[in-house]
Figure 1 (tube, rainbow, N blue to C red):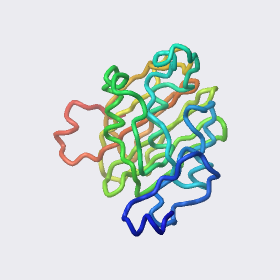
Figure 2: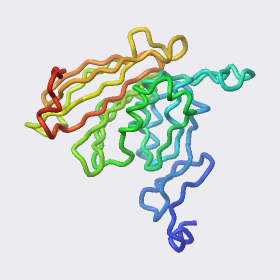
Figure 3: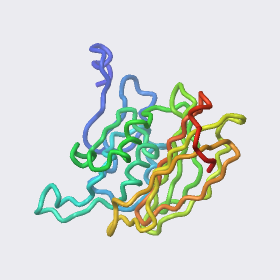
Figure 4: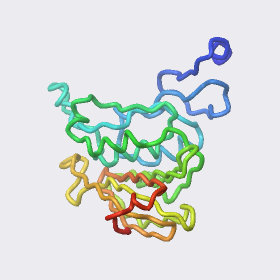
Length: 239
């Protein structure tokens, strides 16, 4: 109960999925569990926009790098319907101020370059821009990390995949940024090749444009960090 949490100075994350009422303004309740658990996930990308706007922040289970459940439990032949790149995007598309890395350490150790995004991504935001969305098909969100000039972009796609034509006019004019793009590889597919991804780094400005393809059940995530020293961009090319 929020009254008791105030008395004992702790925050509350109610367990079990529940009807998404807006809790942002309730004192000391940080978020609520799931609403739509990753373990029950179908390829439905409408949920982030609906739940964030109606239900506020939620507890979720992103960051699953080994999507075949029989790797942990031979009796379970189910599969998380997602690529690794899409799992990274969920840290942006699903708002949660109490974030987690939901896989086991051994699976992250196999993909430490992709795990870097989880290490970098913010958990709270000063600004949110919905760049594009189509219910049940795709959603792309850009968020500005709280108290910084850094941005993060996430896109999740449904069973048909999606191609984004991104513009970055939300960035501050006159400034340069270093972008690290974590995207599905050309042969990525949530069912047949979920662990295929690429990582590219380059320079962005508010005039930059970038086309990115999300595979079936895939996505992409972009870390955009403000350049504070010109030496940081040495050897990097503009996107």
